[in-house]
Length: 188
Image 1: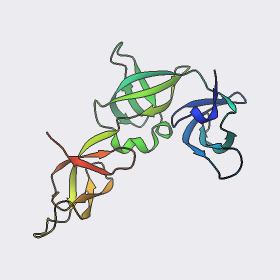
Image 2: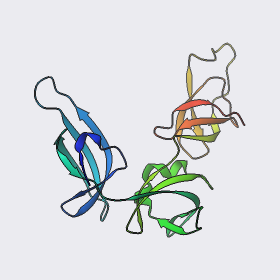
Image 3: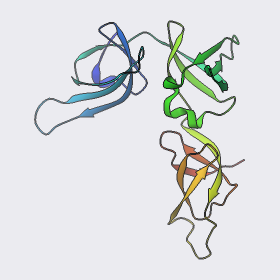
Image 4: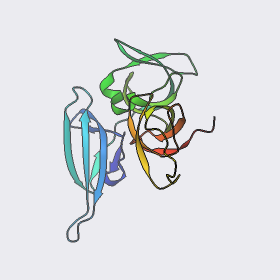
């Protein structure tokens, strides 16, 4: 199916010269003069080679047919990451190069969207937010404002982030899975 280059987003699968690529970043560039372009950073699915392409925003690109299905994360072992389709209990194993940065936020029984092409997963979409526990941070200081300043913290998944001064070790917080940034204290 042909689509215009400017409509491509992160996670889309495109077919270039008979090879499948997953879009890592898609950026529209509008220079002061000249034609607007779309810069695509992609990874070839077959061997993991990364490439960059520039297209005029109106150029046609072949988008590969993939099925997006919801899967439940089960566990990780030496073979890869194991997911289960909650509708028919079919299990699928996904390699770590497909999971990428999302690995840090995968939690047992988390529901994710996997893009499947001819029986193998080619990309993953995890929830935008994850609830994690702060395992290490500086103690709260008296006199610090609750909203103004941030301090470094390490979360239960090993990710470093910045949290408000009132957050202490053991507090569960909500973070954005895109960049690990603090959103709010968890309500559970």
